[in-house]
Amino acid sequence: MTPVELSRTVLHAVRCAVDAGELRVTVPARVVVAPPGPGGWGDYATNVALQLARPAGQPALRVAEVIRPYLAAASGVTGVEITGPGFLNIRLTDSAAEGLVRRILAEGLAYGHGDGLAGQVVSLRVPYDVRAEVVADAVVRLVSAQGGRAEVAHGEPVTLRPVPAPEDPAPLGPDAARWALLHPAPHDRPRITADHLVQRESNPLFRVRYAHARTRALGRNAADLGFTSEPGPLGDLDHIDDHTDGHADDHIDDHVDRLLASLADHPRVLAAAATHRAPDRLARHLVTVADAVLPVLPAVLPRGEEKPSAAHRARLALAEAAGTVLAGGLSLLGIDAPEHL
Image (cartoon, rainbow, N blue to C red):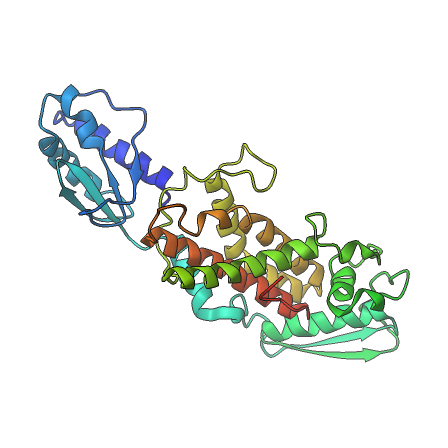
């Protein structure tokens, strides 16, 4: 449950208390939820009871006691405690997002591998062409990751014939050359240019490898600050300025949602890439993951005088999960995922 969703849940609890006649107040337009302060409990806390105490004509502690059972009964909430003058402290159940991150970190580079092609032998007949050879090699890796086996041979009838490269890609080096041949769809002619080597945002391969390297650097930086990753609620992201990708109108929660969706979609993409002999689907998916995670990374480490919190550990876990997916995907394409870039 995101902070925005939890805020709506708190408002719904207040509305239920009003509808039941236990509170006589106007339901506020919004409430604030944030990680609990000193002496707090759980994952989030809200001061809504203090906010409503005066208009309700009751002490904040009494208002909190009225709201508490409605909030505790909400889906996704596993416990509610009242602390201090009337703060409602909330503990959440493991969310789907938290479970996804735990699964990725537990499975590592094998996340997304499956048995959809178990027992199947995929026969690939390719022409004597460098692009066909590279695509076939990637398909062998993808099929193996889905429990099958691919056999490559030359000669007619050809079953895998991507549009050939217009020139020898070897001068680009092994990683950029493979990306240049694998990223375009098989029916598109690949571009064999130095654009694949430039370290700037216009280069998709750079964005993917840079995003992976950044996630690994954050792990090292967190270790220097004395904390490690632990999946959990991501905390309040409202204070993080988002100007990292040129879309100032996008809220960081939007990037988090896109990132989680792309990570959850990874097993489907791997299965489709293997089944349809289309490593280009995986390459484009990795660009999607990289573009989703890069705007989230500035929120991972504590800022200024902030102390590392459970939210920072959870954000680090999310970043590490994204890095794991990027590394695993690049490996299936036969491309190195550097720890430093």
